[in-house]
Image (cartoon, rainbow over all chains, first blue to last red; front, side, top):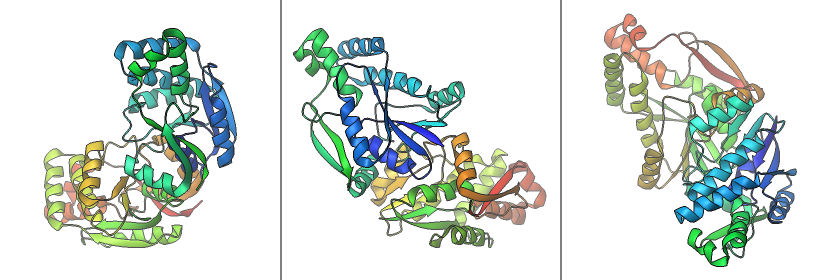
Amino acid sequence: MELALLYSGGKDSSLAALILDSFYDVTLVTAHFGLTEDFEHGKAAADALGFPFDMVELDRDVAEEAVERMLEDGYPRNGIQRVHEHALEVVAERDVEAIADGSRRDDRVPTVSRATAQSLEDRHEIDYLAPLSGFGRHAVDRLVEQELDVETGPSEEISRADYEGELRELIRSNHGEEAIKTVFPDHDQTIVRGRA
Amino acid sequence: MELALLYSGGKDSSLAALILDSFYDVTLVTAHFGLTEDFEHGKAAADALGFPFDMVELDRDVAEEAVERMLEDGYPRNGIQRVHEHALEVVAERDVEAIADGSRRDDRVPTVSRATAQSLEDRHEIDYLAPLSGFGRHAVDRLVEQELDVETGPSEEISRADYEGELRELIRSNHGEEAIKTVFPDHDQTIVRGRA
């Protein structure tokens, strides 16, 4: 069965790929707005893990909306959620039996409710899987340590193929460098370099 | 990492075992009240799948309470939920890094909320995993067809090592055969005979 997994090159979506790999023909798919070359980090991680890789292009208007929302809120949660829901809709258009993402039990964002999942499945006639949604943070950390070689650092230094890099770039170009700090707190990111 | 998976011999807990098998040293554990020999069906399915098997004994008082609740309600949901929560507490006492069950995204019962999961983890210093909680009914059915050899039939004829068999037996002995029908609707069960 063909499955497309929304992929950032980070530890969560990489671990989701390893879990699904025994049961599906998994392709790692990075969704991007065409604003940066960050998708390259998704491709590099996918290559390092030995999975097929592809990209889908998202609607630039959704990025603009998300950024305005984030600046208004003063935090990124609702904007990221909006982009993730859009990305799932785009990936669900692919010719696959199932789509998946790396969302975890303890994530605050993005979250996919049971109702949203069912709606995606019914409208697109696909299965939506969140293989990490039954795993807490501690269990994920243990599995990542066992299975993956990761590099961790501040989010300005570690580039991933997630939405954050492109949304930061869009805030910078529309509102200037300082505006980024009003939305994104300092935090660490991880990028996957290969298997442990 | 050692993991104990609450196991009934049915398709959900069997599929959960296959998912976890790549990452943990999985032991399939059937919880029982000592009221019937139904645990034998769990052992047979575990043997057929090639997993180590063990049993834990539950508190008979919990079965009595659950049965009274079910008769009062006229449906099994709350009684089954009570037994499942007790079973998780008992399995969490084992000397393992993680425990798991076969609960699915679309299950009405048993359900384990994020708060219950976190509480189990904190009090017992273990990880609690629900590997199927990110899979809907359709995805589970497809994976079962791909991975497992199952037998399906009416619940009076297909014996599993789940709580239902023992709770039916307890209702029969306390309240007579007819009382069973006031609690359990007619429905099909599946038991796993091996891998596909």
